[in-house]
Image (tube, rainbow, N blue to C red; front, side, top):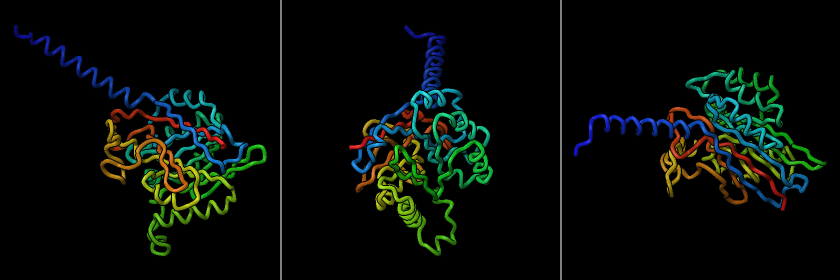
Length: 284
């Protein structure tokens, strides 16, 4: 017996609604990922120190969902690893509100991403970040002190901020970044160093320094994630990228890669929900 026309219309409608619902959930329901990082160089005073990482928000407004999840974690510090804005649909007030909602939860430390370098109003964004009390760590450091012990928090700006004049004088951008990180660690003087940087693909360069743990983003989790192969495509890494999500290690450096929260050019996440990262430090 042939199915009626209404049956097929109803089936198509149900399938369309199901796909739309799945895509909405994948792009708007925040997942919290937890990691524990252990290192004998970490001062015991920082055992249990909790860091919440935000990355690649791209002007996306999650309402109270993101705020409530951060508050629930009770972090010691919050780090934002770039692309707070989106160069294609920039809205600085929305971007600032994302951090302003949690400024009283814990100190917030920020470094720039490629979208900050491209959108043409970075000075305005920096002014607004300063106004609400966010620490801008582009090419600078802050030693965090707890019970007399300290760790170094190092930050670098996105490589696109490096001018051609600097490249001609000092060499390739990646080498300049490596030199800056090493100098900041030296200036900090702390025995344990955390790095805030935007680009996960520079893991090899971070590992050439004495950084203990780096926080990065930029890869958007590979945008579409599949079993076994994981991320499909990431900016500056291309197809089947090496660094998309989770914890990686090279030499004596480990790196956490956030899948990020927002989207940019490609509007959908598939099997790749927006991510809030929580890292707890552990002294061995």
